[in-house]
Amino acid sequence: MAATFVSGAIVLAEIPINGIDAQTSHHQPIGLSNQNITISNSANFVKKSGFFKIADSTKNGYTYGYAPSIIKHKGIYHTFYCSSPEPRAGIDAIRYVFSQDGLNWSAPKVVLKAKPRIDSKTRKLTNRAACDPSLVYYEDYYYLFYSNQHQTGSELGDRTGTQTTISVARARNITGPYLTYTQRATWEENPPDVKMIILPQIKRSGNRHNYGAGQQTVVIKNRQLYMWYTDDSLHPNEGPRIYFLKSNDPVNWNGTPVPTNLAKTASVDIKYDARTGRFVLVQILRSHQARPSLATAYSTDGINWTGFRTLYPDRKFPAFAHNVGMSSDRLGHLIDGENPIVAFGAPYNLNSQDQWGKWDLFGVKVNLYSHP
Image 1 (cartoon, rainbow, N blue to C red):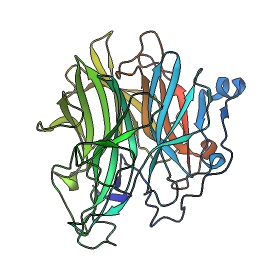
Image 2 (cartoon, one colour):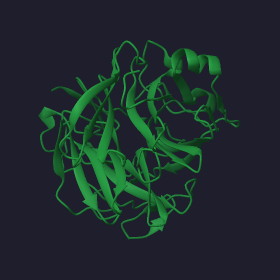
Image 3 (spheres, rainbow, N blue to C red):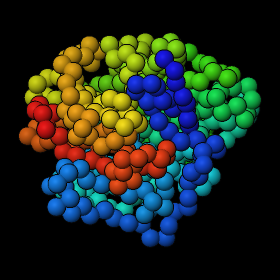
């Protein structure tokens, strides 16, 4: 299956993983404006379309937003998402907004950013991105798992010689400050030596396009961390697959990744439904294409997925939508009796024409157990 990579991310023929490389794109990130803009969705707009805007990129001085992680805690929705960075801060940054009603959102702020540097030993560019957040509360801390990107090719300017890895930051309070785990086993703000806690199963380099390992989604169950993530390194010509890991330690994931039956699949979000005792996923099929759809499936063990079903068919879901996230409590559990917010990146104002890297963050309340 053919694949295109941008900023350590893949775009497959059917299911893409997206990103922006600020060094190669024509839409360079612009500086932050002096006055950030909050979002107020009119009741008439929401009633008519069902969809609402969570974050407006251009009005807040950046160019794109996507791949959200959403927690509802004490009646407040907290949304973390991938966005274009501030100047000289890599190729992606994680921003944060909050809302009391899910419709009216605060102005965004950057909570995690990259600090690119040349590694003194390998002489390669490392720590290039902070993207694809997944936030959970575990043993008195909020752990923010995110996708990073590193150069693997022999030439510094070889943009195809990169792979994505997974890193983690944490904070006592959900709003931060977030301190990143380092190679020295410390937690620091924007350190130069970020620890890669999960690597691609096969390290590749040179002129071959590969994504690596990233787009993680994490849930707490029985006081254990459950993680699913995308990895295409074992069989790059076959496309990515979702792999599964467990751990009792947010910075140590030493088990062997277990392949799920989610082949040729990327960018899913997974939560636990305590009412049914099952894991539930959402994903956008044909993302970044003119006729995407929103789908779901479930699993009792996190490995074997079944019950695949369409939630929003292509005629009802926004064109060129991509990189989905679903709201939950801070353990990654669905909130009983509530329809979760499912959020995603899409063209500005839900335009039917796409310009790569020009995306706002949108959401919709979804009943996971019935058709819209």
